[in-house]
Image 1 (tube, rainbow over the protein chains, first blue to last red):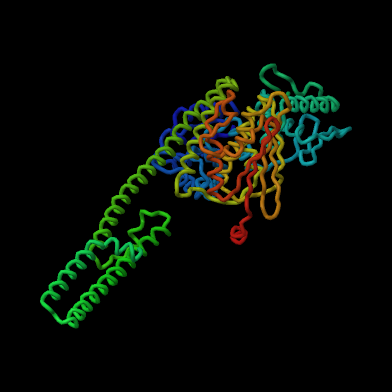
Image 2 (cartoon, rainbow over the protein chains, first blue to last red):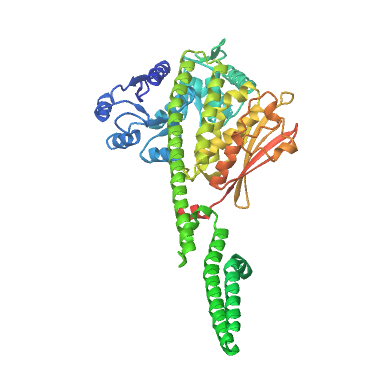
Length: 220
Length: 338
């Protein structure tokens, strides 16, 4: 399980953020004491840090600079300071991403998974039982036949696949699509899902995507 | 200063000396002074008198004409004391001292207000950062409790939007410029704004069409985000329910300029209101038809555009469409820097 360190001095945000991360398959760790942060980061050794700029004792940007001197851990700056110069400074100090408060929780999760994915050697081949999805080519196939997936179908499938076994809400799917410049509406999402189902059915998986009423979809 | 004005101003002194001269000449005639002597006395008297008059005239004329001219040319007239050279005559010296004292107290007053304004602006910025924290908590709570009742989120978004308005109002009104121009792609920016307004688009069944393929602009991305967000939230606010609503965002390059057009098929703006939409607090007819409107969004957007050197224009047909265009100049200076 990926461990994410939350460095923020707002108790309420920390608590809710931890809950969000814990519910999304990560382990959220809250840093309570801001003295000697560097040593604490070293001992916790997180997989990713969510760092606020306005924290006690030390400025977040300086802290970022210090962390970068010994570690390449992914860092996402999460701050209410909404101006260009802070963003430019943070990015030049080696932040991986910059998000301003208030952010949409789903979008924060997308950014976290994108940053973490960048760290890993990503493969563009997804294996789903005996189906193979070549995401670069936009193709889904089994041994006997090959079908073409549209960009939207591919996005939907990949997203369900990353959250395999968990319920994915329509809103989360929609956010993922919009985050990839596919500004579709509710009907179009339904159409895409039913097309995707038909293709899976053709390849012998008629019940791969289940609908959970009022909650969303789940890839079994 | 004209000569006759000067003479008129000195009419009392002139009449007195005329009178006295007449009396002296009369006495000289009574005492049978030789005519030649009277003429010589008159000649010297008037001669010295005219020289004194002309000298006084030019000395003052030079000073006051220059003062008047400097004042005319000056934009900020209260700075006139910087341009006065102290004259040699008493009245001028007194005037100089008075102007100098007035200017000094004026400057103190202005400084005082500037400090107060700066303090206030700093406090507003700080306050906005602070108020975003509870907004963030609320957003996370709504998400975590699985009560993402979109109406709750909508209200949080509304608060956030108003808070941003205050922030950018403070930034746009301030004389110093705290923006930072750099090159960035419109695609990323539009994505951010689209995601921010996703729920409103879906809830109202409004289609979003984006065509900004790989076009980059020179601007402050945060300021521009605010500007475009204001335009789009207007489109969302004033959509029509009797048609398939859309918002189309299209960028194009023409004559070394990038034109970003945001068009909707909403309720439109009447011709009489169209010229005033960038005015402060202007709400127009649309602001009175049940949708709350502060009349600040487009005003701030225009101010920010002006500061960054972008041109913003609006075109509309009542009941048909509204189209806002932002025109970005290509900057050679930045091309060289790169």
